[in-house]
Length: 468
Image 1: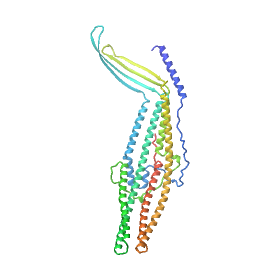
Image 2: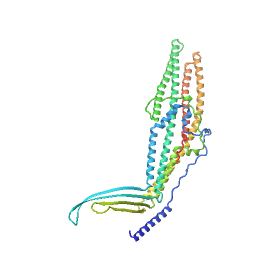
Image 3: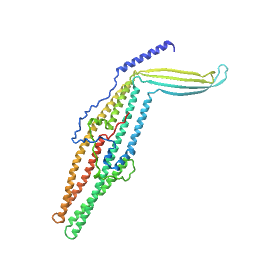
Image 4: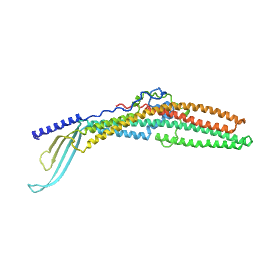
């Protein structure tokens, strides 16, 4: 290139870079959004526990080794968690792909050609073999941070994927614990039903004996048999519910349908201490789903910055080094090399780039709304579980007192009937009410334990974000 042409090229390149700098100064860089939803200063529940900090492995507070084993098995073999781990691996690979764009590319090419021509001097044909190897290097100068922003977006997507995996693990652990509690509740209810059925069978035998001796009527015998049949119906219903609950646990732990081992009975399952709730603001760093939503918001921020950078000129550098060798030429192969650069500035594209910026801005607003919804949902879930733990505890106390009172009522009614001071209907009603009260008390206990599990889940379950 002649000196005059070189000067003109440098002048044009400087002018393009100057215009790009001016456009960059005029562009606005998005800043991280703040949470628009208000954060409560304290929890509404007056009985909010102030116990130990939320620890990982919180399910061990039940003191049931079987439950510990089921949760560990679910965390290791649950199919949803395996899919989440694969999505994390995909996000990590995509982040590596994006970061590779910040480095120069180096390619090797090899071209060959064989041709037959006729010499103009001799008029004879000859065959020529041409071989052209070359190295090509290319690099985009990240003047406005577009490539860096895309790398930041990929990193944020990776963090969001990791936090989503942790949120799924927390959900699987809590669901496994709650399912096991429900299974032990069904076992306890089945034991009560079988004990009640045995009592009904004894009562039916007594009624038949009294009828044969003329001490009671056929009506009392029929009523006793009807109550026995009603209790017998409850047993297969509970057995079916137990089998289905076992299958739920099998699915959670990634196992084929099979019986589930049992540990402590329901009446012995009790958390050693409820977790301390802390302040509502601490929840924003304690739950993995909120961290995932926040990382997703950061990713859309970076993508918006990259979309805006596309409106500015881009600078590309290139270099080629190679040679040409031919059998038709004498001497050493020709050495070839080139260095160059290009500036590409968008002038008219029908509004495509501006539309991409608006789309990125809209996605950022969606991510912000999703983050705020996740935060409000988290606050609501904690409040719900706090209320459930307190209310179900009080209901359980009343149910226990009712069951004790009904046991006494059954004893009195039975004695009065056998002594002839009351009809069999009084004893029948007392027995029926006692059976219902026993079933309700067991279910309330299971619901209260499940609410405690739900509280651990709502508080983040001892999750800690990964360093890095």
